[in-house]
Length: 259
Image (cartoon, rainbow, N blue to C red):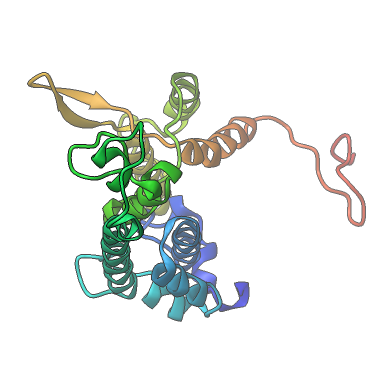
């Protein structure tokens, strides 16, 4: 599948003003992750779409993994179908309660039982006890499918980074990619590269503002996955100023540069 990805995706993010654009490789990974989540969390119709998409080339997968679910996308259509099916299944489960009373209709109430206690099945009006399907968990399982919010499928499941990780990203990245005084001496392409890196780091570490008790407070949005990807390059950049071992042809790393 890698041969279907354009060579443009190999360009370093910092060397292009389009660093914040999603590349073909990134888009493919996003689509694959979405479909994997749908396979795990979706109903029968949605999982069928996801299974089909994961067996398609990237362009076909892109069509099936369209995230604009407020439109008539394949996944949105499948979600509606699954929700309608769950609604019908809930109606069928609820209708069974009255059917359970039919075999007892006309029978004399045994001693030690009340009329309602013998003739009315669990879950009847005025009964705090759930019906048989509720007691076994089947009703709740179907209801969870019915009430599952559609946008849950499209939320980022990656956990937020903890305070220690956020501090590590900031401490390592700020000296390298934080905003610096303007220096006209580097070539234009180098100044552009530095500018792009500063904007990328700013976007990575800039927190959003959300209302809390009537006051806008910063909300940390750095994800563990982003921190993992970025901490490596930060440490590599720190080592750039130090002498580095060189790879000998046909062997592993040499312990020192050749004399």
